[in-house]
Length: 158
Image (cartoon, rainbow, N blue to C red; front, side):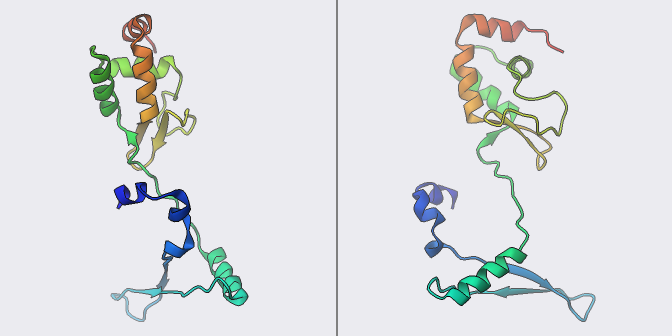
């Protein structure tokens, strides 16, 4: 599904014409062991002002939940693997640690939101920092400079 969505233009992907909205509402049951879930398909007429008003009222009652999108973020081991392959030199976890400390893209403590989001973010889902492809590209560019590679690989940071 993700591959298909990647081929769509933004205006099509965001259009209400191609979207189905479902509102899942838990309901109370008379029996302790039974669970019910109400599911209602709502036909929305964009030309009906009353429907628009009612639809907006329903949307205001719904609490939105944000779900992490992790498919474009990499664990450190994948970063190391890609960087090492691209630069053709040894690049290990200690070097990667030195790199993020040298460029100050994230703090040492876990569970921090104080990160350079273009390169790294904390994931509560995986309980770890995840890195972007932009970070990989940046590292490859920087580590192809011999003086930077030597500095990162020989660095003794706390």
